[in-house]
Length: 359
Image (cartoon, rainbow, N blue to C red):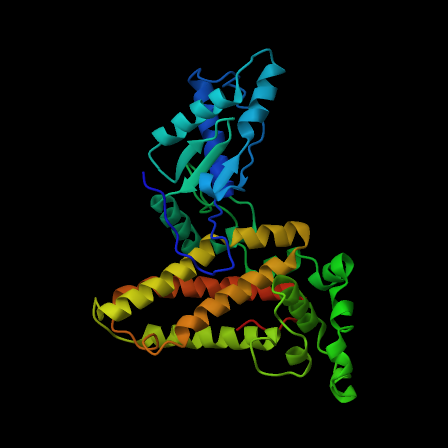
């Protein structure tokens, strides 16, 4: 199997694919199969093993995701009178994974026994297909999207409104964690603004969104927001404008007729556009899970801004507005529509029920 070589989406990002939840599930299934086959100690009838966790790999040279589960299994086995080294556990688990029909990961072992894995082209395609098959809601949870015998097909559907209800208002979390709103309005630049401008108090949802944006990207300045300027640095305006432009762009492409193949230049441009949008979808959970579990709502803001920045880089290209290629258009539209749903949900979470940026 060949590992996927991902394009660089942003220079200041480490490109990472975050099927760590799926990798943990694949390790669990492989371990149970190994126990049933007598390759690992355990009771195959009880089907109980230590809980499996996987994380984003700290050393990118070794893979995209990593798990130290073999060490936990060694301790677990030792307490039951069976001694097996972590490296041997990892060797058995890797053999089971690589023997499987679905090659989602290429697994490499560290000398000390860590299980490291890189996402394959097949894994990326399967994960993306699961997201686009009306299962984008699983990106806000730790639900396994792909894997042997796992699916969201029978799961209860989650809507954007459901996500709002299940989340606490982020403005309170931001104030408690870093007192960012107070720090913003203590900046020296505020003293230089006219009192009439400072007296205009933005809505709480706008403050929360702007605060999250400043946490995510230090280059954003407060004065465009306070003055209500129509620019990228006024994050609430930028998000509102971005959703409107994305929606109109999707409608425009949907109405266009074209041939199976367009001109070579357009083909490459739209392929690059689709790849970057898809890559952002694939790694969304690296933003959603820290945000919803740990109150890191700046991660959601960072994702929203990244999607809008990516969209505008192509949207403003003269050869993107009109394409003759049905193939490229049909690949881009589902991913772009899914991004709109995620942005809407994220913005509603960031600002609570009063957030007006729903497209």
